[in-house]
Amino acid sequence: MKVTVRHIKGMHFQGEGSTKVMTNMDASINAGGTGHGTSPMELLLMSIAGCSGMDIVAILKKMQVKVQRFETTVEGERSNDHPRVFKDIEVVYMFWGDALPEDKLQRAVQLSMGKYCSVANMIDKAANLTYRIEIYPTK
Image 1: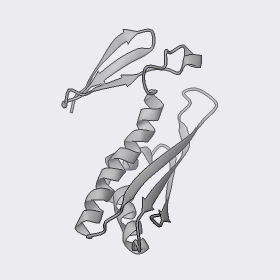
Image 2: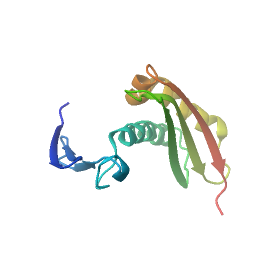
Image 3: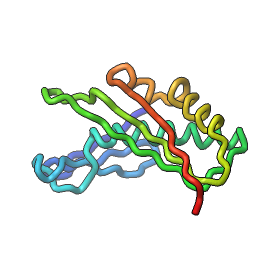
Image 4: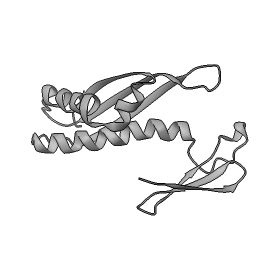
């Protein structure tokens, strides 16, 4: 696996992987950026959600569980001192649907976070990574 990251201007960079899709990265405005991209630390949190989300969708499909809507939020707390790494990260998986089997949702999340998601397993070695699920009925 290989990516290329190009400096655009100031703190704005563009990353490109094998799919040739451009990902914009930038520092926040108050950190000297222009706001034209996502910060690298935000991308790390998004990577946890994307990696585990793909696993969960695939696992639930095999379990024949149909959810109407699925979202994930990831919140990280960073240390105050440099290099300001994440100390604690919480992942919240939110599922919407009627009569969703909580045991299957829990199992899918557990398999992803404990076994399949490479990003979560790597980050768990550096930060306190926790997760929980929330289930909502459709309206």
